[in-house]
Image 1 (tube, rainbow, N blue to C red):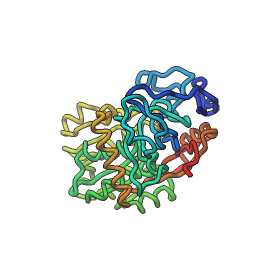
Image 2: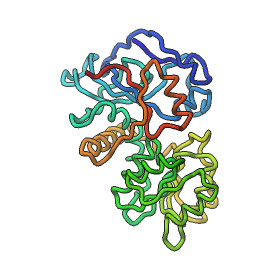
Image 3: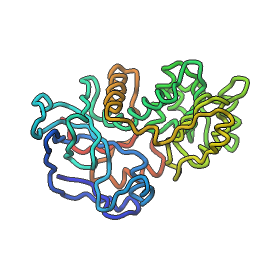
Image 4: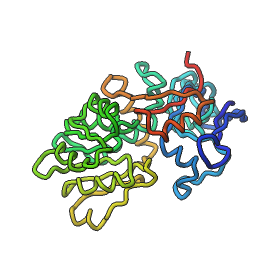
Length: 327
């Protein structure tokens, strides 16, 4: 099989396309002919050598954890009904034209949803849907979303808007802000503005200019600066770290202000919840109520360029790898 492999920790040039042995499905597994591989920012960080305490991988390795494609072979004890089905799954080594997955981990892709959009929802659709449940966003809430123009941020904006909440999205630059408005944000704030916290308070409105829920997909100083914008009794989710680290928050202050803190560990879902949340996101997308924003599509051979685009932060929405033709 063809695969993009990280040969050593370093910049995007360490991603090299190579030939590797075809995987063989074990009992209870299927072989997927991969159409698209999802990408997420943390994969670029792991490739650079960051996060070994969270993600213990050793080069050479094939990155990526989510694929869409067609089941082409079955291992022992797998029902025949799976053969030829369009599916998504979490896998180990998604940047390859074939992958194995447990049959129990497969999610069928609805006929009304194409495999590109399905791949874009594998990670972010699950996490965004789960985050809205976790933080119990309701129609009376004011919701602040950091990184609102990214793959997950664009979904969070739509999902929070659909719940009737007042949504304020923080992004960088007019093109990204325009997209966030188009997706349903009630107000947008440019993170490059030196007075963005004050602008955010004005946009959130209410007597305190604070957010009932903060969804931080950026981390670092931006996330830390957003913490004081959380209302007393509110919820703050520090689940993102593309800035180089998760937001550093003061648990003592959070306790004093009755703010519930969530972190990356709170969005590690059980297999049952993964299946449920994936199906829910796919259903919303198939019905036209949730739009997967795909900014750029690269070939498998361009995996290094895809990582460079993600790190450059110029792309809007998701970056996806097209691994093979879906015709």
